Amino acid sequence: MNKMLKSIKFGKNAFLKIRNSRTSRRLFLTEAYQCQDDWNRRLESPILQKLKSSDFYLELESKYNNVGKFSPLDVDIFANIVSEKSEGNELMDVLYKLRLSAEACNIFDSTHYAVIRFFLKHNNVDDLFEVLNDRLNYGIFPDHYCYNILMDKFIKDKDFASAAKVAGLLMLQEDSDHPLCNALSVYSCHKYLENPSDWKIPEVKEDDTTEEIKIRVPYIRNPYFDDHFDLVDPLKIVGKTLVFQGKQMNNSLGRTCQLRGMILHQKYTQAKELVNKWLNKIKEDIVHEEVFDLIQKDNANIPEDQITEELKDLQIVLDTLKNNNLHKENLIERIENEIKSAVDQCTATDISEQKKIFLEWEKIREETLKNQQMLMDKQLRLANIQKIKEELRKKERLLTFFENEEQIELEIEKKQQVVKEEDEKLAKRPKTLKKLSKLVEEASYVPPTI
Image 1 (cartoon, rainbow, N blue to C red):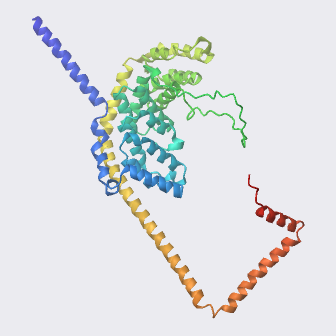
Image 2: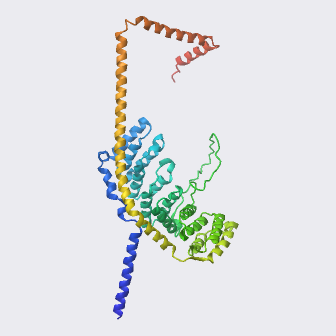
Image 3: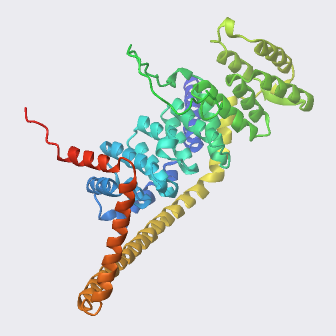
């Protein structure tokens, strides 16, 4: 009997493990979502196949030194053919130089995708976020597929700080068009808040030199903080992300995200007004009951001297909210169910769309290259025609010299007369002759040898 109970118990546990493992595999994206085989197939294109990244980079550098700018097509080709991790600096250099030119606005959609896939392939997280965060100098913006691939990868690696950083980029772009991006974004933020010390703020190096350097500036810019792109505090970025995503959901999960996010963003007055609005309009399931413990944990490290009157007023309203009928479901499980629903809804469509745009990008690249070659051929033909016309003009002048000798001499006399009149005008100006003689002396001066 005991053996039977043990076997039943073991079988039950095994079933639970299998079910949980299946759930976790279904919860996040499968390998098929990345469309790796279709993405690798781009290298079979005749344009990319015959180029070697190291040689092509030298060619781009030579072109930049001569012309002073890059073609978006050249940058796209280079971004698609780089393969070695050591070539990351060259890729960043090419992107930076493209941003310095007027061609920056013509960057290809495939370039954004290729750059992100390159850094992700080599797990080069530092350079990836340097490029994504410095939009002014690199101009790389992920699409929805990249957002999903990035967050899924970091979540599976339990690098929730990086996943939350990607979610913050969605908030900065105010992009809420993709349900799977939204669900992964909310999950990333909540998982990051379980251990918020993982997100390190870059330290600003202070100049410790004692030498005073004065620099003339045309005007002094007044300090300005836009509370959006200027945000650097991880908790405020995550808080604003939760508020942004919560506003897209008209349910208890969305209200929970908004409440926790506003408190993290230190918008206590707005949070108080929002809670009062909910209390007046909603009778049950206003927020998840679990959120109050999470808020208490988030605020545990606030020093006593920084607890403002707004925060105290908000706490009174929160105590009132606690006494209502609240949502009892576990918050993370609720978000995981949202992800599962979004995966079922979007995966097949996203995979199909990615395969489609890969082919479109290849076609655009081929057509652009063909148009550029036609334009170059046209310019060469025009230059050749101009050269031939100039040579014919010279021959005609030689052949007709004796016929037009008098006309040529008249033109020479006219030019000489114009020069003579200008010299006379200069001579009439005061001190002109003195200045001219001084210039002649300076030009003919030879310094003594020592």
